[in-house]
Image 1 (spheres, rainbow, N blue to C red):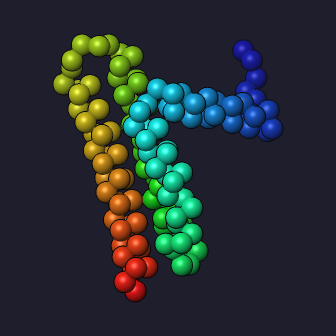
Image 2: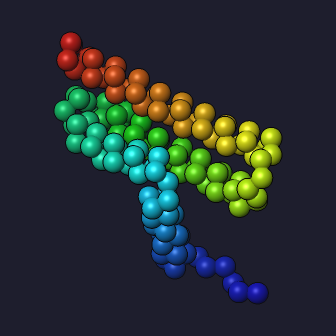
Length: 123
């Protein structure tokens, strides 16, 4: 049995796998591409909308949270699809729950951006 890698070697391999995951999500998941582009467009705007480091963190963090949840949802969908193409109630439920998580993260990001933008424009 091969000994488990640790230290820098492990970090390098983990980083490579993570970048491979980003590439797979961007190439194969339209929703992730759309959210990544929107996030990239919003990030510079965060410096104008937010007035404090905490507000910047909330704005940027809400965008990153959407991407994280979308990555997890895409992973769930990929595993479910790998199991088989036939419809199964549990497969559908898993996909629906993942979709609900994405929706909640989008709502939270929209609320965060909306409230801080409102405060900036009217405050």
